[in-house]
Length: 309
Ligand code: FES
Image (cartoon, rainbow, N blue to C red; front, side, top):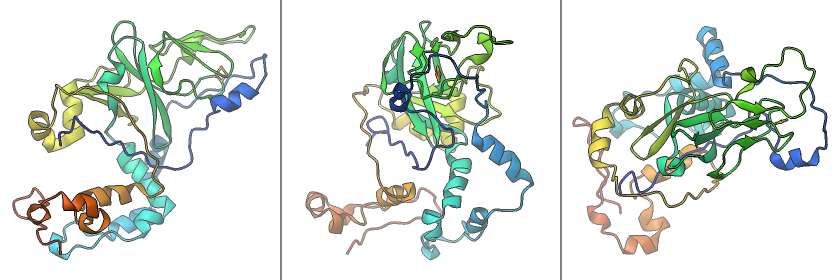
């Protein structure tokens, strides 16, 4: 199956670290006088965690990783210990080392094909909105109002600006604060300081990519090829040449919430059909399982499952 036909976005479930007021809750409030302004941190929790981790001894989760020997030949390897799936600190570590590092695919370029198109999403605990402005430039922001941190936009569609559902602050598609409702007489209030917090965004083929790392300047344009290389590493040529079919177009997005650790789903997908004869007998009857194989693409380390019985 081509990469362009299906894109799987794994979103680990946990409590949000950036608190936001839900739009439903926001509608229940009737304040008409703006409460004091609150500056939203421009760095993600991971930035702080990374800085602290640089000087700290290994955490319990890091020690769990240290116990794992990645050099072990595949024939001698065991599955990761259950603590990797159940220890909350391990999930925190995964967020910091995997989901908040480097580029992550969060959507398709077709979702922001025309000016004023936008889509929202959540990666880890970070709510984001991606949009295309009237000049055709794609932007990404924390989807959090700079006033009292309400969730700003929801779903997807088209908008000429983002109006906060809580007190009506209004932002342009380039993130600039256009209107702060009934803000008068507040000293040193400069709308230029209260634009949406930008996120680094790039596109490669049909993919929209975000990067949460703190040392990436959000205003700097990212070359598509550079982002692709950073995202896919040494696979960039293989994926770019044979796995993206440009004739495929985006039709719809469906989201499923799975009540399990995110790796359980990946394990299931990556077991190469090992479970199919028993868990999906109907599917198995239509497949030639005796010729189905999974191969680790390293010349010195072939792993082929041919005998499923
Ligand atoms: S939270 Fe008050 S305007 Fe958005």
